[in-house]
Every structure is written in C-alpha cells, then in structure tokens.
Image (cartoon, rainbow, N blue to C red; front, side):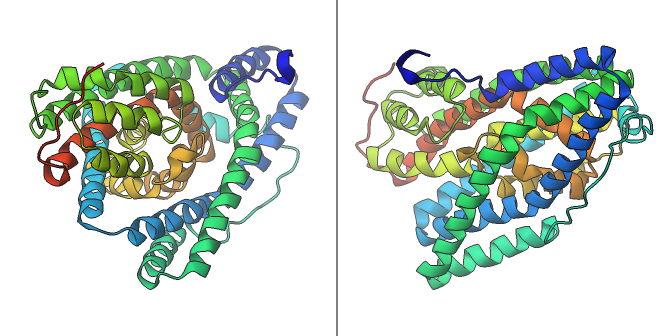
Length: 400
C-alpha cells in the first residue's frame, strides 16, 4: 500500500458484500456450514442483547449530564426545537409509511420461517442475560444524568464519560466489525429457507420511499426556517442550497460530528450570528436526529407490515417519543443510532433477533443519507434560534 496506508472497505460496502455473499452461499453451502454460521449468529445476538442496556446507559446519561451543565434559555429552546423536529420527522415517516407501505409491500411470514427452522439450528447456544432491562437502563440514565447536572459532581460525571468511552470501544471494536458476518448469516439462512426474494424487493421499495421522505423533510424544515430568517435571504431553496456543502460532506463522512466545521461555516453563510451558530450546530449534531428517526420508523413499520405484525399510531407515537431521547449522543459512533434503538424495537414493537438484524442492514444501507439529513437540518434550526437569540444586525455573509 502506498505511504503505508492500508486499504479498508467502509461499513456500507461490507454490509452490501455480506448480503450478496449470504445470498450466494445460501444456494450452495451444506447444512453443516449453515449451522456454523447460525452458531455465530446466536453468540453475536446474545452479546448484542447483553450490550443494549449498557449502550443506552452509556450514551444517554453523559449526554443529559453534559446538556444540563450548560443549561440556559438558548439551550432549553434549542433542545426543545430539536426534539420537536425529531419526533415530527418520525410521525411524518409513520403516517407516510402507513399510507404507502401496505400498497407496496406484500406480507411474508419470513420471521417464522427463519426462527423456527430446525434443520439450520446452531450447534450450541450460550445465554448472556443483560444486567438490566431496557426501560431500567433508560430510567437510570435519566436519573444519573439529571442528578449529575444538578449536583455538578465531577467524579460521577467522569465515570459516566468513561462508561461512554468504554461502550464506544465495544461498538467500534467488537459490534461494528462483526456486523457484516451477522448480516451474512441472516441472509444465508433466509436464502436457504427461500425467503430472500421478497425481502430484497421490500428493501428497494423502503429505500425509495425513505429517500423521497428525507428530501421532503429538508424542504419543509427550510420553508419553516425561512419564516424566521433575518436579512434579505428568506428564500427557503436558496437557504437549503447554501447548506448543500454540509449535506455532501456528511454523505462522505457519515458522521455528524465530523461535519460540524462545514455545517458551522455554511450556517453563518445563511445569516446566522457566529455565536449562535457556534452554540447551536455542535449541540444539534448531538441531539437533532430527524433523518435517523425518519429512517428507523419507516424501516420498523415496513418490517412489521411485511411480517404481519400489529401496529397502530398509539404504539408508534410512544416509540417515536422514546426514540428521540434514546438516540441522543449516538451520532459520534458509526451505526450508533440503530444500536441504541434496538432495545426499544424489542421492548416496544416486539421485534425479534431476525427483525433487528434486518433493521441493522436496512439502516446502514442508508446511513449516509440519514446523517446528511440530520446535519443539513441543523442549519434550519440554527436560523430559527437566531431569530430569538441572535444579534439584531445579523445578516447573511453570502451564499454558496
């Protein structure tokens, strides 16, 4: 390799390759090989289930503690605005999906087929009970986060931050690298059971609808933001065009945090005061998750329709409300949002291990677009916050 740099595929190409190899292997591999794959699948899913409460605790508690320690009117306003934008995107995704998906997706009992197979059972199973339930970990995260922010205790805050670092290491060094093998085993199993064709068609339809939705969300956010814009730049499409460099940067980096410098610079170009942009953009990179929520809700609804599970707006309203809180601070970790949401998917929507595996594959296949939607929407929120907290003389410094 030139300059000592090793070539490495990104997570998305690895997932795509794992799906392709799983489908191909499913047509030719012997049962003993499939059982080895399902043994790995069992071990990984057990470890993932064990890790989910720790992921929630490790992400949410330090995030709440950090936000609380900087409490002020602008913080409360921005956090509320970001949460409203996030759950609104989730509700829009549910309403759109509930209207479109039943016409596009045929119910297929693939989950029963995959999970009830006796011929492709793992060689052995190792139980890994989680240390606490999902709801217990979420409540504990709130209690610890709010307590630390009120008491301003440095020692416990450092412990929570160290826990977040440990969880990040587990995700980056153990869970994410093994995800392609997990996806491979799932698709291998589905191919051998004859269910992969309907699933792939479902993937294509879901991705098309979600892409259209995320474009609509961005246009809508900037139409609303234009009503609060200062100066002469009130055209929502010009504002959105000014933020496009941040959008395309996020497509490449797949990280809200890594895109902050570009998002910050483009927000100032839209006329947001430098101090307001410097506060809102880094904060929203952590707590504003419209694109991610939109994807998770649409994928979850589509899989429920595919497998014939019951759903209604009351169920998804509660799920979306909890999701908007659970996935805060996840943007710093690749695939962090979907990892943090797995517990809610299981506890609130009744998802199985096979459902969660398909959710991971679907989510990561569109990861960069969700991130781009998140960070580009941050610019719209900054424009609104600037209306109430920016300097009166703030004017656009130019457009791209």
